[in-house]
Length: 327
Ligand SMILES: Cc1ncc(COP(=O)(O)O)c(C=O)c1O
Image (cartoon, rainbow, N blue to C red):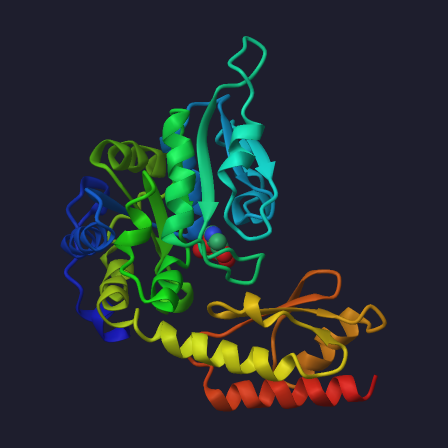
């Protein structure tokens, strides 16, 4: 990727003249089965730009109560986009269509107009859980029935596609538009991509600009992105194998509560016994060279990615065993 950055052909992307960015965007649109694509700086910028491109200020957005947009994006959905987030809890990551039906209120002068449903696939706070194409189709049906648009925060959509061995288009065909991250498992230093129809992407391009995301010679970000799309998708399998191994071994350790059916992609989320001091556990893991954090009290998330090999998984398991045996 560093070599590709060094040799990238560059131009001014604010004028749409960076050939490397254009090549990446064409490749991404084609892979996702959509008309057009737009490179942005981060997943957070992709979500905010997409919300603003899909909706007008004052409209209502249904999203999952544990979603990244709702939890971790500094409230940009309301603070900047001016939208009303309407959280619905769906512990399986996918809404049941009836949940949307139940949440919809009659059109009224007193209520904001509902405009968009957001789904997150895979779902971060549920430990990388997958929303299947069938589940997406059911949500899409309810969206169409009520003239709502469907957007997917697909930061890790290739993890879902690789885990189920299904072409990514089988997921994307059910949503109006989506974003995915070039960073994370696809291993780029920076960047995310929004995909959708031409009108949506044209609006997004202007919104990206007002958000300060016009990046001039952005080919230095796009060059590794092309490598990610051409060469880094299949390697996600290794992350999934390592996560599975990690999960299977951790599930046997006393003090850890872990449901293996939730280990579907590249994350392992588990609960520590309430008697264990979570901060102390994290500190001792750090002293053993394992960096992680708690999603909430005593709920730990471990992520596998490029550079984490089987031997590192073993090191992690041994460290956790040692720490918990002293409790
Ligand atoms: C599901 C999901 N969406 C969006 C993001 C935001 O990505 P970024 O950190 O690039 O802003 C993340 C980051 O972890 C994520 O997990």
